[in-house]
Image (cartoon, rainbow, N blue to C red; front, top):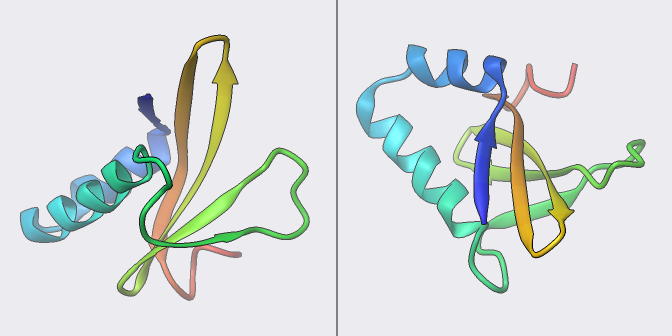
Length: 86
């Protein structure tokens, strides 16, 4: 499974310390396992299959898009718990 990060997700990761970035990236890698690992919930109000992954006080908004035989995991946004849903 390929992982694609949005521009805003990469910008958020660039502002964090190395330990936090590794923690988030490890959690995102867990999404590629079968079944996906982590605290995952489906987001309401979106028809494109968005889900959120909880990593401590951070949230990772993502969706998985099947593209033939290869699935692509799109990391849409990463942010703090209180700010990500606005």
